[in-house]
Image (cartoon, rainbow, N blue to C red; front, side, top):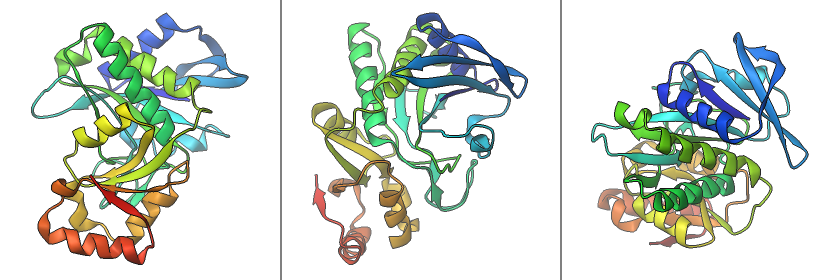
Length: 272
């Protein structure tokens, strides 16, 4: 399922590009008085629905749709720097629920689907010579869903939200995640450390067969514990092979306790 929001101009522009480039037809059903569109991909029905609320507050979405295998939110991205950025991440709260979702609960992370979307964004920005950064983001904000869930985002200001060429790139990335959903190859990892936009994890995913599920950025490390780390591993769609530590991107006072925690959890890790 692909999910857009009437509260989000970037989301609506990405939705328009999906409908312009792919063969969706209007379904008989509606959601929140908005038309639902559907198509078939590899014998699987894919729906495109539109919400009347912000996507981060779609905690009850599974109540209206059964048998969800993958939820891809198409969304705007905001940052103070206003750097043109196309990004992908899993939603969920590592700590308090400050922007939707549930406290200390993350969604299931579809690592392979996120890597597919990330790679598609990179390929198309290069082909179209678009001046956008392509990046993973750390796990953050709601909703906290019990199904594989990801955001593909267009940002970071109103200029980019209305850039239809960039919106088309995100549209193709969303569809790539859906189309290749069954292609789950490579090694799956949990990333810890570094900035919210982790260039190191992004580069690894783009240049190798390693795909990241949840990513815990440096600023969140002080508020996590073994239960959260274990949850991030267990709430990844694919089996997590090991943890990748952005070693320089972890504060010195947090390193020893983090390593001790991983040893107690008996989780293998590597430093990059």
